[in-house]
Length: 66
Image (cartoon, rainbow, N blue to C red; front, side, top):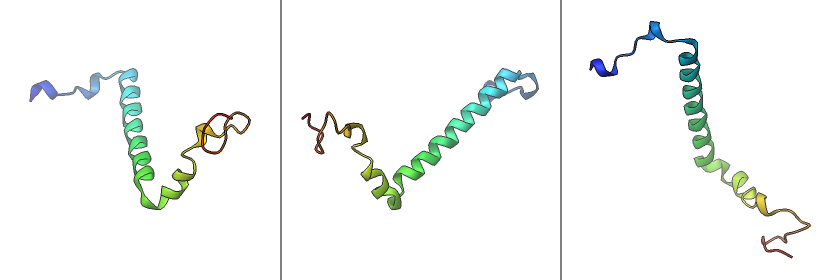
């Protein structure tokens, strides 16, 4: 168990910054997963599913080039 021991007092500012950003990224990913997999948000995400293909000057509604 001593292998997993952390000396919290010896951590530098960069170490604490890394811990903060790692925890923040984890929380943000959990929030995004909850939003994406929530059934009540399905219509909102389905309406945006073809967003990359919507350039009307170059693509038609089915995503094929004109």
